[in-house]
Length: 179
Image (cartoon, rainbow, N blue to C red; front, side, top):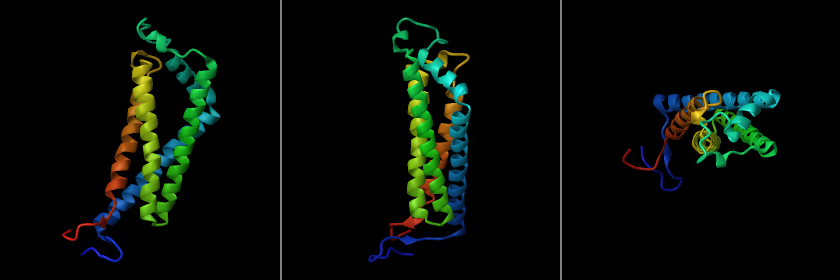
């Protein structure tokens, strides 16, 4: 195997790389299905998670420490806007990941890897920065016995993160002539 200087890196297809590519495709499809169902549930059962977002932002089930309560967002309009933004982000991530899955199925691995990476990054940002960092720390969600979504957020963060690693490791293009 060598690098072709006119067309770029060679592509190595072995049973291992085919299995890794299949794994990347199936994990991407699994995450796409999951987040599509989450978005669908949030749209069709709007009130359930709306209450979750409202309580987290209002910080009304935390320890109510005066040094932290200034962070609370009690405006229903802002709470609802945040919830709608979450649903829109989830829906867009689902669409991107469904498209990535379609590209995997068409064996357009380079584009599938790229699109899947963007969709998975969207979820890592939403659940890592949004729920774990902002919800968990800024709004002290960890203090609430009733409205603590950190375990669920961590589950999705790990699911998307592992999938991203598999997607990135499925790249079977070699740029080093010695491999």
